[in-house]
Image (tube, rainbow over all chains, first blue to last red; front, side):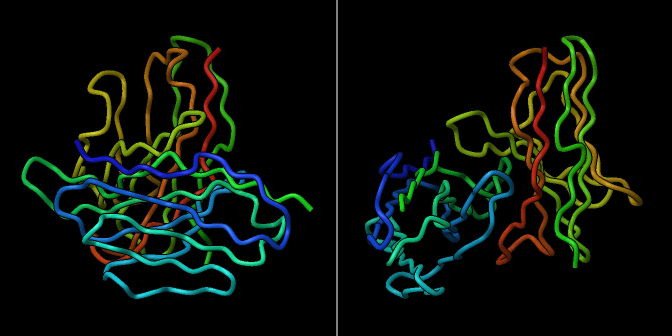
Length: 115
Length: 114
């Protein structure tokens, strides 16, 4: 059965700390891995990763994928209170016979950044 | 460019009633996905539609649930004879094509069944 496992499930840090969120997966016919940030409402897209070893950066956030070891990490440096959210990892499966699921999500990591 | 629009934001139904959830995809997006999120759980895929076609409904319960995406108008997720276990947040997402484009999510409809 396909699965996406995120760790830790929750994390509390102080402003200015650096955090690393983990995502491991076992998915047939892997196509890409995505990170989303979810506050009270819609998950908002952060990164899409398809190739191993290529770091994607956006401001204080960065992410990398290891397709050999089947995991990805999301780093946030110099955290701010506005970074408090649930961070969701999702893996996109390619089409297989019998149907396809667009994205398989992990349960998320709840990050709380205290002032 | 407006994002994915869902309405209503909150919906309260008594057991046995019907719930209708609406989703208008982003402009130019022809692929719509519905996901359900329970408290402390990740998003679970329900159904994937293109205009007038259901492409994949493998995540949707066979009974009481149906979805459509007509040629004109929003996509509708319909739940008949709701039960307490249907209480959840239902998110709609859209993309311009099937491969290589991240999904963009709406703000969700929170359904509460009393």
